[in-house]
Length: 516
Image (cartoon, rainbow, N blue to C red; front, side, top):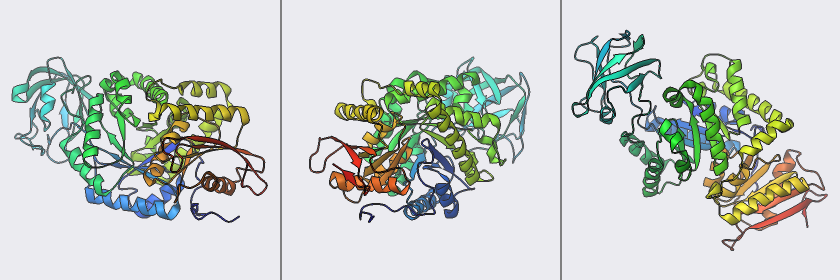
């Protein structure tokens, strides 16, 4: 069969897309920033590449961005780029010389003061019990009795006295441990005066003007206003990226409904969430975030330490494998690798391992009726602003889901300009492949995050049969269709007829072309 001119080719070297319906996000770092590594990661199954702006220079990120663009062109993979803003990560300044550690004994008292500038200052008395932090707003949140956590919660102090006007406080240590330069600081339940979008983040956003990305993740979100501020900054720069709110503060959990009204996706950022919440509460918080994102019709990424031991080992722990498995059963749309691919010993092996675990979890969910019902029950529709689609599109999408149950088609095809209809279909967890077609490159790349969706580009938004043939060719190449099979075809828009939607049911003919 002759392939239509607007049908993309898929090179034999690329991994057949759709081997996992749950998408894989991989962080790029020193272990994976070269072109060959990025290409191998894409072939291994990465759908979204994360650029962590807490590390690296703009020039280094630009080089990686160019590598990803080249890989996308050469492999045919519609991979997306996620720009993860640093946010107000509060860190100690220089408190000891070199790589030494400051010994902290129980009940020992320390003076915490503010640096003179945003630069980290060296202590006037090396080895003294002085701590320094360059974030002025931190001191406005300190009051007697406030807990202050250091180094991801491995050391805890409490505020004895605080003088916000002087940017000074006295802390008492509650457990023995060590502190090193530039380790993180957390205020459980506090830190409300510290803005989610920092001056550094604003500068970093300018980088995205010349280097378009599909998603921008906002760190340390506490309230919907944080998301609105970022949206305003993006609009001023004419940046069309979708916003991901990282849920890593207890305040964000309290304001989750309002945040969901403003964002395009969520991330369960278990690192800082696990520091600020009792560690036993984190699994329940994860399940709640995933469930609420499902009800809102929005994608959700589960992140942090999913295969953490693979930074140093060639295999994950049993607990890590179970963690990934259960996140899939919970209904997450994507799972994320951080240090495993950024600085790990074998980033490609980490992705392959993640893919294998995800495939096993998806196979289990599809054959276990109880699990299937539980996952499906999570994906119930909220009545307002569901999946960011119009009420008409929402009705069409749910009609597709009902048709899948009744006529058992082998494929669902959605033609979309914005990608929203495909994201909405994704949240209904259909048990057959979904192919999304669009002539909008931004939508195609963003759909790399949509669970169970294979995005394919169109060079022309043509007639229904012409566009449908692209999806049929894709399915035929993978032996997914036979004559007589049915294909459900949803068009979120009709050429030259804005505001129209259409739904077709095609039966595949003997020549594997649609038959009326």
